Amino acid sequence: MKADTTGALTTADGRRVRWFDTGGAAGAPVLVWHHGTPQTGAVIAPVAAAASARGLRVVSCARPGYPGSDPLPGRTVADAAADVVAVLDELDVREVIAAGASGGGPHALALAAVAPDRVRAAVVLAGIAPYTASPDWFTGMADPSGLGAALSGRDARLAHAQTAEFDPDSFTARDYEALNGDWGPLGADAGAGSADGPDGEVDDDVAYVTPWGVDLAAVRCPALLVQGGADRVVPPGHAALQLARLHRGELWLRPREGHISVLTGLGVALDWALSR
Image 1 (cartoon, rainbow, N blue to C red):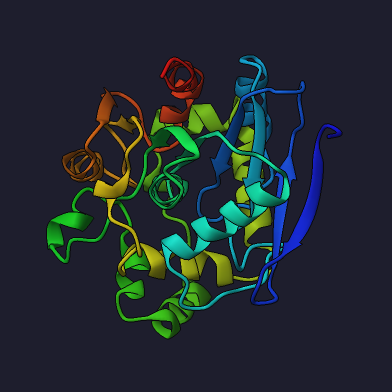
Image 2 (cartoon, helix red, strand yellow):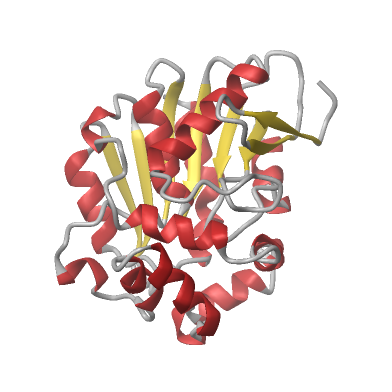
């Protein structure tokens, strides 16, 4: 397959799912990258660079409601994982490493749960845990308003999106350093991810706080959780919740890192996954 290709799959229910593929040498191991909230699904430069340095081909999909993928109101985390499975079938990809950051974390674990025969290892960086209905789930978040609105349903989360503004205190000084450096493309892609409207982000948030459609106990592969101890978007308690449910989970806590700066550990995390 040619390098850096993109296309669209039509699902059984008639929806378009946009996919991206960096290509690579024949037989190269495949990384399925699950994007954060909001993003386009395109393979941004720092992800591509970390993968390329390790001989990995990267496949990524835009979740429903993001540019190029039709909305699916009421979708679960498992629904989005099923779209990824369909794309992997289309591309004739059998075995993968599943990885994702922030909102991509639940989707990486969901792929491992729904396709256990295909996922050799999973990597989650700053990933959201399943909602527990406890106020502690929000503890440590600088701005939990979006997820809080999602608890009241899609209409409430859409209404919140009309007036929501980013809280700059959500990021630490180290986060801003990362965004001003190698991870700058993440910020630009986040803006592009919401350019067509809030549907993708809204449906992501609703999916996070409702049943995912999968149980983390169903994840059979080794799973590495990479968590920033200073994360103000997805605080460390979420990694602890996930670790408690994963049979083969490991936790790498990076005490000084925030929600973005923790991504600087992606390369080492991929080395871990390739060694499984």
